Amino acid sequence: MLRAVLDTSVIVSALRSASGASNACLRLVAEERIRPLVTTALFLEYEAVLLGPEQRLAHGLTPEKVESFLAALASANEAVEVSFQWRPQLADPNDEMVLEAAVNGRADRLVTFNLRHFERAARRFGIAVRRPGDLLEEMRS
Image 1 (cartoon, one colour):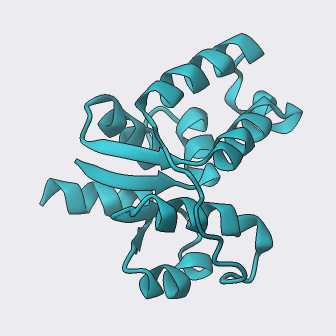
Image 2: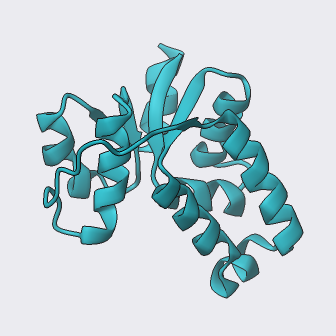
């Protein structure tokens, strides 16, 4: 099973479009082909963003449905404890918790739309960075 950290943008995109690559990545989680790795801080970010008014308008889910989704996602996640903080590694301080989850969880992949934000730093730790569509292609081969 592939161990991957899913950036918040991937989770948001998955709820906005049932036919997109991000949603397909979540289906691979449900099929137990991807084991998502998450820290408490990253999961709390998922929750805060998904329950925000702008996102609720975009994905159209009630707070109860978002909470139900998050509960299902939490049951599939592997909790990662942050033993070491490697800051600063990235230009955007908000991305640091995503990289820390990947490094401390010994992720195989970091899945994001922001390749240029993560590639250089993730490479230092031996973690491949992929867009959701690229990850799907990789898993098909």
